[in-house]
Amino acid sequence: MAKLSTEELIGAFKELTLLELAEFVKVFEDTFDVTAAAPVAVAAAGAAPAEAAEEQDEFDVILEGAGDKKIQVIKVVREIVSGLGLKEAKDLVEGAPKPILEKVAKDAAEAAKAKLEEAGAKVSVK
Image (cartoon, rainbow, N blue to C red; front, side, top):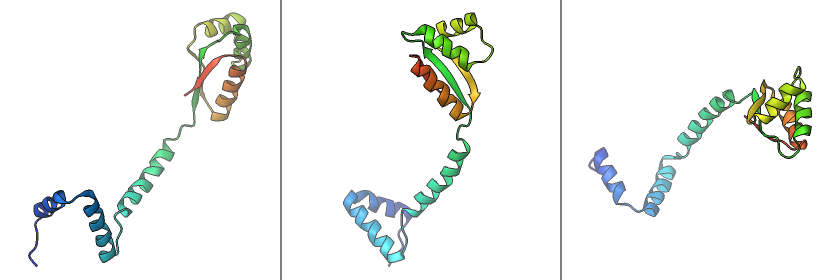
C-alpha cells in the first residue's frame, strides 16, 4: 500500500460526509484500541484545577437600590456596617449603587444580602 501524505489524507476526509467520518472514527478506535475522546478528557481535567485555584473567596456586597422601604434599609445598613452614623448610612443608601461590604467571606456576604433584601433593598454580590 502506498503511503499517503497528510495533505492527501485531509483531502480525502474533506470529501466524506459527517456520518462517514463518524463511522471512520469508530473503525479507527476499534482497530487501534484507542478512543478519540481521551485527549479531550485530559484537557478538561487539566483545566479543572486552574478553575478551582481561581475560585473567589472574597466578595463585595453592593447596594443597587433602596426600594420602597428606605428607612428599613438604612437601619439594616447601620447594623451591617459598624461605625456608620445615621447620616452616613442615609447618604450611602441614597447614593446607590454603592458597595456596602468589600472583601468579605461568602457566608458573611450572603447573610448581609439576605438582611438587606428582607428590608426591601436590591442587592448584588460580586
